[in-house]
Image 1 (tube, rainbow, N blue to C red):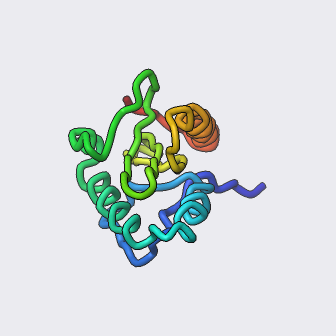
Image 2 (image 1 turned 120 degrees about the vertical axis):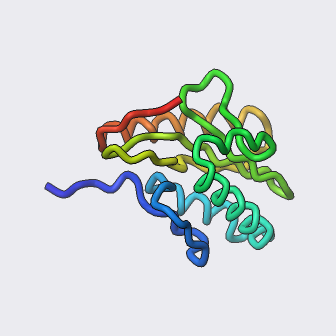
Length: 144
């Protein structure tokens, strides 16, 4: 029986290479991100902010949370964090820190354009279901 792919590599912005295998994405993430950005008129500006955020997350790992202008732990949520890419659009990327096969990872779970605070409710629900999906597919240890 085939193994279903739940996490994969960052595909959007293929010209940006990360130095490690630390960052992964939920298999639906790349397509979601492309859908939000591709026809937004914000693509070039966004890609610069996105690369910067990914670079901080890749280098600093959980210490990225010290960059409070860019990252935050979502209040009341266990192991759900947010990368805030503010600009013409308020793009939010929800992610989680996990350990898979004894390797620490940050998994980008869901991306959305925050138009009002209630957008977070739906996004958090999606992110939580994706963490559950990852846990079921891999022996995963979540980290707070």
